[in-house]
Length: 398
Image (cartoon, rainbow, N blue to C red; front, side, top):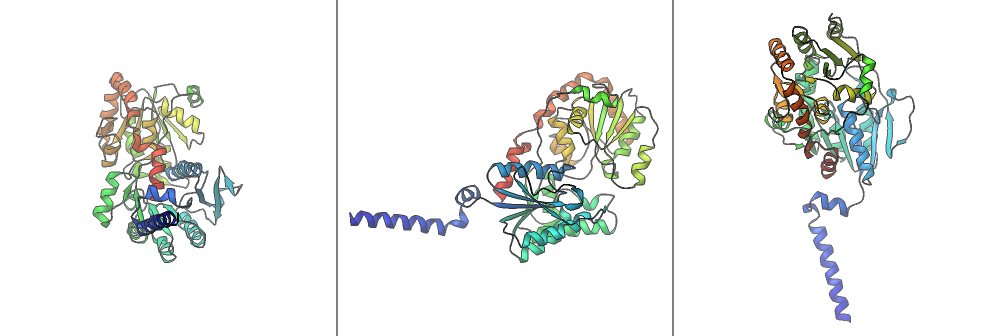
């Protein structure tokens, strides 16, 4: 009996020794099961549940899934954007840090106070979104907080960040590759950019989408629209989304359909103002559409969705167009080529007005092709773009 007890004790000691010795070599997914539930903080978005753009949608979809899987999630919010400030929504802890209303400095101002707060909190890992927050990684580095950052697109190439703004974004993106433990990109093409430019590899985790079918097509009647009788553009009215190219090309096309432009800018801007002054009875400027059901029906019932975004990886508006089964006409970029699998799920046009004109005129005559594209585009939403899979990949990184 004594001999058996000694044998059992030796076995237990051996198992403990193996676990301790190989702790750092265990695969992350197995180590998470052995370890406590994680405390995760998210910094860099406007907050939760403030669904405004791609980052906020990512935060919403990710944080809710992490909470359901038993982890603690804290989201830092811009205080000025929330009239009501509950401490918890859907199990997500909310912290409201100071913010200002400024096109340039609002995010940096808010992020600074969020980083100060998180550095003195009991948090296991910090997820940061937006490469502008790259330099703040120095704070978490000094105080030994585990961090990862989703750096998104090529902000330094966007026309709205001319001069000093462009320099800052490129420098901030470089700092992100130095100060953060893990860089995350949302496309393979963006990973190549960071490898070539900053000599830093990154984990590719795509932006997700939820497949949806039309439920209330009558909602588009509020905008005096009919099913399949309009083209759709969704995005901010900024130069790198090429709304001017698309609108002017459409005006000069032979189309009798309408062109619906969803989006605006939240500040005074001559580019956006000049676009809205264009006179053509076929143009419909809706501004921001906050009702997600109306926005969904605009996608689901359009003749084609036109995508002119020039810089970025997995674009939220186009992945939504795919998930909603739109026929897609996209600007020919490496990022669009990746998402549409080199033309399998959409058509491409060049950054030239005649290319837009010819593409629209071609689509007007090809009703059968457009029907086929609408049937096929949703098949582009593979596991890579499934929010559950996206969340599992983030958790593996954490």
